[in-house]
Length: 601
Image 1 (cartoon, rainbow, N blue to C red):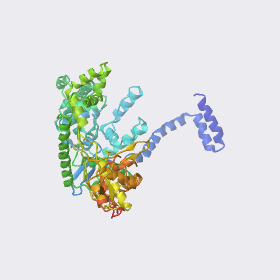
Image 2 (cartoon, rainbow, N blue to C red):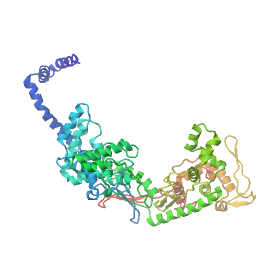
Image 3 (cartoon, rainbow, N blue to C red):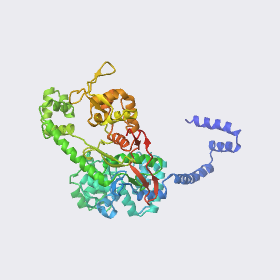
């Protein structure tokens, strides 16, 4: 390396001398430094540093951004009649004012993270210098103030995450801006409401509820010290998974509180001997009156916000939807009632209140699918002995039976004239069944698919009064198989009109009509009428609904019939406004596409 640098300089010297005498002179001085030159270079370093900081300032969050972060407003989702359906928050957070947070939390935080918080203006020079010295000596330490941590928490993308000088400078600049704009109490309040605490708990209020089942105002010294201790490393000092580390860290926080006069030595001696007591429970947001609808809307709205440069979680968007809150309430009640009635019938058919019982072959099949059975087999037990072991666990058996035999129901109401969705219930209970059976679940529609066969026939010129014989049907399939669709009764050999064939859902009549029209035409028409996402297999059995589809597609396609053949795409939103009520986007009903003639409809 010692020989390489002079060689590079010499090469540059020879090449650049011909280009610019000033560059050549500068290179000569670089290779032959004088005392005066060294002093000039040292004097220039602070100036270069200041210039670098000035260059960085435009690349840090602006004052307006900081103000917006403090008054963060999530998107509010309203029904067509003005009722709140949901709020789209970035995390599980509930903002609390500083006066509603226990003083123990503030004392523990400042004593541990930034004991000169009230004396500095965003950067603690003494602590920064000390951290730098320790880092250079091999003992890496953090020197960030609470304000710097807040800047990092609020603007991780703008400031960056790499452990570089540039990142630290951007962090410090942003901290100075925050200190210029906010009071110390506002900074503390914002920090305590935005800091993460694992398990999707953001802010001190959700942390208090998650780890101690109480509000932030009720936290005692030990609980406050435990939560403050987590800030050094949430996962490492997780009191749920690493209680011993969390206990040691809690006592370190207590010692810091003694050091800075927030706790007496006598109290420390007593408190440090107490065990780590937590009352852990994950916090979940209330589902709201239309949770499955809100779940699907969030995806759509996030894409819209990205395209139009809005923040879904902080710009205070007001989204006016097509849902009618009264119809939504009635639909939810109907699904619960119908689901419970069907569940009772299913349970009776399965032979027990839980839906299945010991001694049945199907229950054994279910139990063989459980991790408990596999674990028993891994110990060397035979199949019979492993089944006996897991069957003895009544809780496991009941859980398996309920999950395997739970009946589902879902509901969608749509105005066929404009495609506006009025009610959306994706399952019997969102908290137990978050999977959306309206848009995500694909099921065989069975006989509800038959109208598309008849629609294709009417579109081709058939009339409701046309007849087909009620006779045995045999249809040759690819591969040499024969499909023989049947009905509950025997063939009567009598003519049946197409009107009656549809009204009475006759399989043999529908299968014959499918042969006349052709599966491809039926599949194309069903897609045009609204079954536009699920693949339809163009085979004869499609007539009886063998290709799985979603409820949303079927409602949309039936809406086309009700709208005299005019297809209208289902819509969820009528208008999006900003926080001041100014309209940002208006979604007027689109003209229907005539996919089926009015006569056929």
